[in-house]
Structures are given as structure tokens and as C-alpha cells.
Length: 122
Image (cartoon, rainbow, N blue to C red):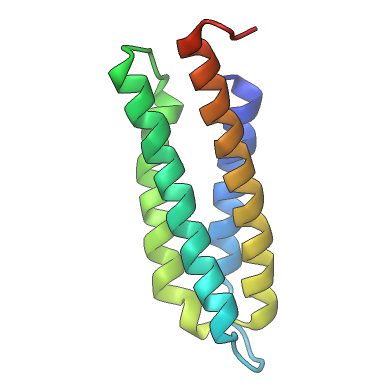
């Protein structure tokens, strides 16, 4: 996995965690936003699990940053689920944007791993 992609993913994970760590006054978060955050969080975790399985099944070497990412993603997911009810709609929308970027990055990483497996990586 390219160092640039790992750093970008780590920054997005931390940003998403910070967004949900912020609770504030306001009208609260809408049910649709809460559901979107939960779904996208689960999607990010599943993408990581898919990549991890591809790496293991094909005897690829994953660096320490990638392997420790699982713990960070799991912790982020727990924090999201714990804090979502007390957050604002604005924070929820920012978190959705961060999760979308994270999902896009994980999808790109998954595609790169698949290309490596297929022998078409550049």
C-alpha cells in the first residue's frame, strides 16, 4: 500500500473520530443522518476486512500501519456508535463526508491490492 494512501486514510480516520467526538448544542441529529453514519461506518469496516482477507489469502505483506489500522477503525466505529445520539446534524453531515472519503480511499486500496494479485499493478 502506498505511503501517501496510508497517510490520507489515517487522517480521514482521525478526522471522522474528531467529528463525532464533538457534541454540541443544537437540534440534534436526524434519524436519516444517524442511519447514514452507521451504514457508512459499517461499510468502511467491511472494506478493510475485505482488503485484509485479500492480503492474507494471497500471502501479501502488509505493513505495520495497515495492520494497526484495524484497531483504529474498530475504535472509531465504537466511538461513532457511542456518540452519535448526542451530536448535532452539522457534525453528522461532516462525518458522512469524511466517511465517504474514507470509503473511496479504501475502495481504491482494495482495487490496487486486486491489481497486485492479478499481476496488473503498476
